[in-house]
Image (tube, rainbow, N blue to C red; front, side, top):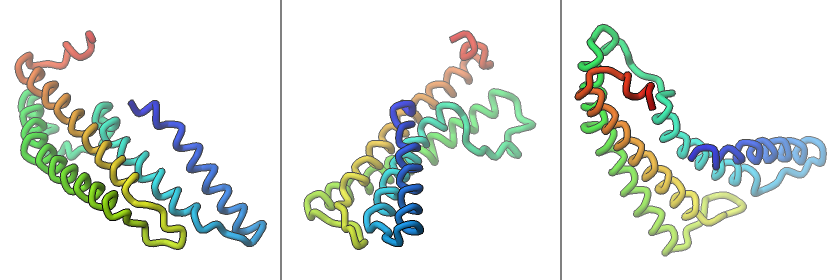
Length: 158
């Protein structure tokens, strides 16, 4: 899924370089560039949360699980998903989705000179949170399988 969003990075780079060029060469900064960079960057970073979870690229506190057995480590990971991550992400998704709907109905604008509408970025963040929740459920299934089988050999075979 993340491969579809990798084209956003060159767009952000082009916007930053263009803004620096406009500001320092022509002495005419744009009023819309920073807001657009913020919108695109927020979307790209939030969509990357689920991808990072899938690849296990997050920072983890192994000080608690480093000396535990594989099964105990996976049990703690499963506990964290069920008690912390899932409830938190459902709450964030609910709040962000409700806010996106409200900003759509009220046609709320961002507080800047350009004043773009706010709902598209909030709707995209809600979508990214839903994708992250789906990835969390996949991680929960992996943890359950790890706990049943006792090793990670089945993952390496697939």
